[in-house]
Length: 222
Image 1: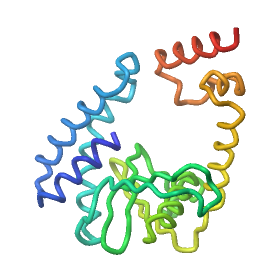
Image 2: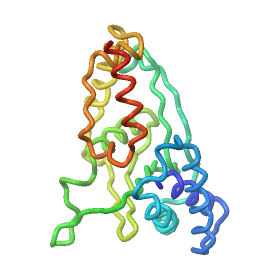
Image 3: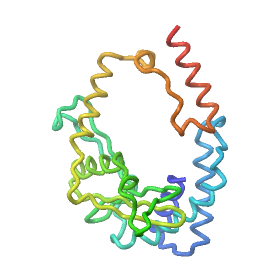
Image 4: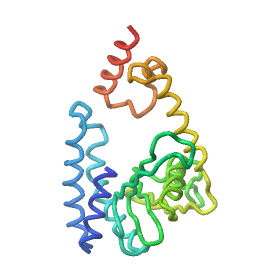
């Protein structure tokens, strides 16, 4: 859903398309294309019909909200830099969403933005800590201010990174991963280190991925 919405929004902004029906058709086409790139036995999910429609609505919201930041300089710009500056052995690779002259805006498509009775967005839900860590890293690597734009089918919420500093936890996580790679050089080693836990909601409706994971863990632990 997110990929389709972003793809359609970029196409519309680059070609100065404002017609909602045109954007809708392009987004839904892209949703089907991106879905075909997934593993066949994971699709369709129980949410796929909703997401097909939501991708178009959210694409139109992106097109309405993003012009306030100026002209798009780049979309999905990838930058790879040496990690030595932050005490890392491996390079850091970042891929942005929408880059403008003064700011990078990371667009997030979501089914729902939770608001309190006061109308304010519930701070326990948004911005998501993982999203903030990502944008603090992008700000450091690209040397440009970053923001988050959440859009649901019925709402939108923009968050800047002013006063937020979550770079250290992100770098520390990378250091943990690098250490794990040293003591567990193969995929099988990684599997043996961690028990398989399927209680996360992301596993629901994905029987193919559950079967795949259970088979992989079973074979590695024999």
